[in-house]
Length: 124
Image (cartoon, rainbow, N blue to C red; front, side, top):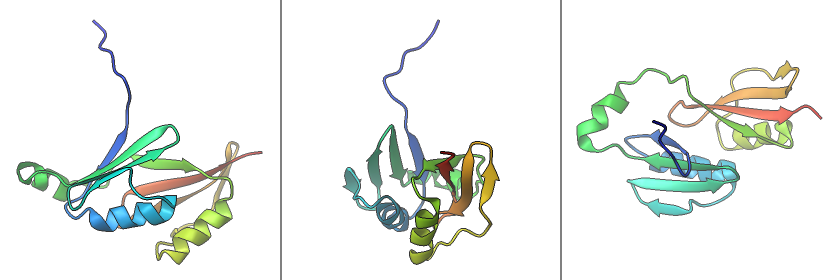
């Protein structure tokens, strides 16, 4: 039996979400679609909903003890150099070099909680 779903979105847990709300507001140049301070924030992006949430007390340890995740938030950008400059101006410069691949150029960056971002400029 197959289950049916209406939509899918990505969420990031943090015991202190407000620094992430500020980071993603600056990075995406928009305010959250909905925001319950210190509890939940949601951004409506083209093709994706991004939620930031504070875990309930009975789940907090699960998120505080987690290893680095294999999950990356990938953002296609028109101008990779401009995106790198914006992150650098925000105080979060990507630690590595630009990677050139057959599908375009990309670089890894990290949000205030160490979640990996992949900024990707498709090959034109």
